[in-house]
Length: 278
Length: 133
Image (cartoon, rainbow over all chains, first blue to last red; front, side, top):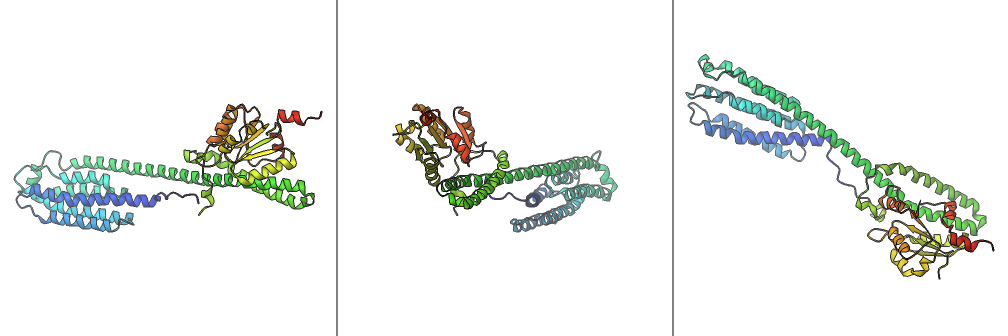
């Protein structure tokens, strides 16, 4: 039979895999990033260790959940994992922000929130989860600012916490651009897939036509010989001719596929036996 | 020995080859040399070159010389009869496109009707020989 190439992934399967990868990277960054944050802040007075541990453990567990689903990832699971991962990060950042703000040194506030918003723009499984998570990082920073004592608020650099809205604007623009680019590349892939399928069909039809042309020619010429030698067979041979004519018309119908073919070296001298041999 | 009225038919399909030769003898009352490959053509040598018409299948199978190679051999060795390529492939097939580019050979698609076949077998040398005295 004509070899049938492995089918390309469906639109939904591609989207699921893409979402799955983004969520897995996000969980991996949480599992690695939060211990690094704690390592840098462990000298800060009153800095608790449990937010970092909780985030790291959550990131690791969620990454395992995703790996368990790696064969059949779904957008729903990836979205849920992504949101949960970021919710836990927000809780951890809420706690650590209090310790940072109360520390005697100079604190550049909500750095992790700004980074998180940008990371969400790149890694979110879809537009909605991206907007929600970016909104979460921005909202948390603003609300946390107003929960700090006034004295701590006044120690923060100029423009804080409102600078995070600039980050949010950039993050949303990046998210929109990424979602649009992904949709565009999916559309292009779909068009390419359809084109490949048409080519494959055209190739099969033309191979069938080419394969049948010679036997049909033989039958037609043989009928002419019999007609000459045995005139009494004329009615029977007329029926043979009409049948052959119908097959020719079918063959002619396949001609429309000729324009669909982009010939390759393999097509120049195809082996017709691939059509019929199992 | 080959004669100008003889027909050379090159095709890798045994049934078509035998049927074609039978038809040429039965309907047209001419001799037909049916051969299956480029190697057979070379072996036939002078007898092939003396035929009036050569009908060559373009594609003689994978990984073997094609009808175009047979055409080249015939012309190189002074064959001055009519050469017709017979093909079951699409007009856009690279070998068919190359055959059309040759200029002094015709390309006819399979299946051919008896009328087309009759016109294919017309050759000036054969016509001279068959002409009434």
